[in-house]
Length: 111
Image 1 (tube, rainbow, N blue to C red):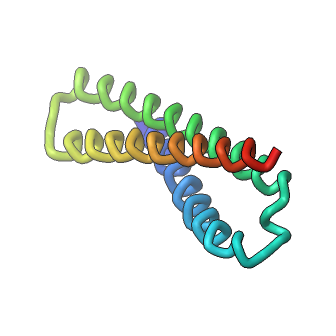
Image 2 (image 1 turned 180 degrees about the horizontal axis):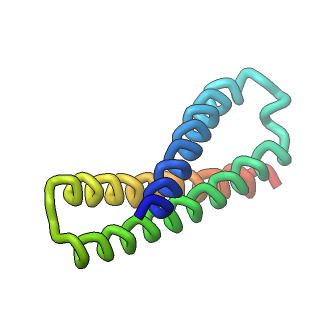
């Protein structure tokens, strides 16, 4: 049980820090010509996709381990909290997937 949840927490922390850093970069992008290069857009698209897939993988791992835990030990309030955490991970995946679509549009508008 520990490894699936640790993986999920780790990926969520990485995605959170990346999202904060990307928000900072996106607010600075109009004022800085260095951030308007094609390579910056390629890196953003790559990281968006990688983190979206990692979030989906982590959410799936936590959900499957949670199902195993419930089948062995029953359901309690902690399990409900795990369900909410997995749901938020899937919502974060959807947000990063949308961000990847926006990054794709930005990249192809530059080419």
